[in-house]
Length: 337
Image (tube, rainbow, N blue to C red; front, side, top):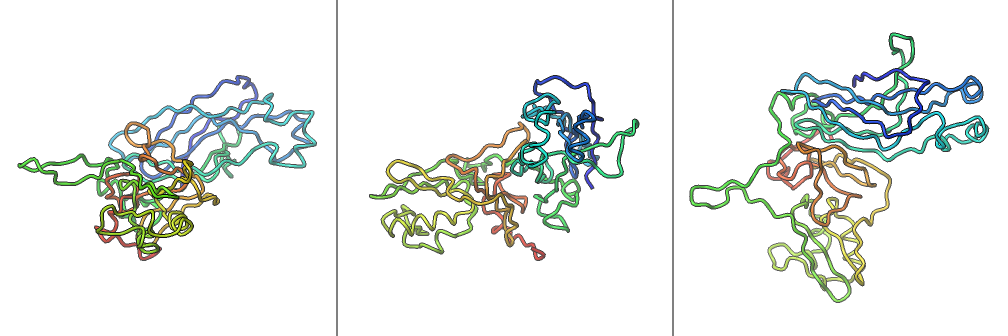
């Protein structure tokens, strides 16, 4: 169970500035604390179960890291008692009719923890934790996350069981190594998108972020041709067939342009994380990646889609957190999923 330490609610909060958020991360837990703003008696009588929360701090400490990682982030919004986005005595009746007038549900987010799991945050709105209160008898709230394995060794896939600390999993990507003769020992594909120009359509491709799902070569081999250079022939099929095939690309490595207009995020689907068979996590619906590794940033590839992409879960990708197809090289297996 995720554990969180959060600040008690305060009725004297009046600042509308963005509140700094302090995050402690480590291997198996993440908790997001939030203040519970006291409402006036009149509003509480009319809106009994509605609580407007201010996310003020994040505290989660895990003993499995060599040292605690402390990061500072700024919250994207601050809800205060007199804010226009909150309930007031004049809009209580309207708020009673529709909960959407109080809080607009955000899309899920994924946070890759350094040398640890992914955290899937489905609901960024703090919820009161049952049977938990502070020393003053006030309830505490938090945003809970689900830890997903990305070291590849969990015995409870896709969930994290903490084994990453035991095996020494590293979320860092390997640098290019050279042997005594100066030749590269581990060939790293360059992060560069190439354009394959046809008469009616231009196909864009970045080999660096390809997860090697083989949707393109299996569905339209006349255009996507293995062992042939150039490997993409935009004249090998009609435009509709090419578009339909590109839309099946899970990693976002492929996109296309028609009449100078690029179509990169073409899949309008609800946010979803799919655990693929013996492969990566398939992310669709524009789930946001937050946080990051080492330098606290997540670098997407050249021309990559942020609406759909794939995240490594075998643990050996050299383009972490993204999948680069290494699960096939090591014959990664997950019989339960």
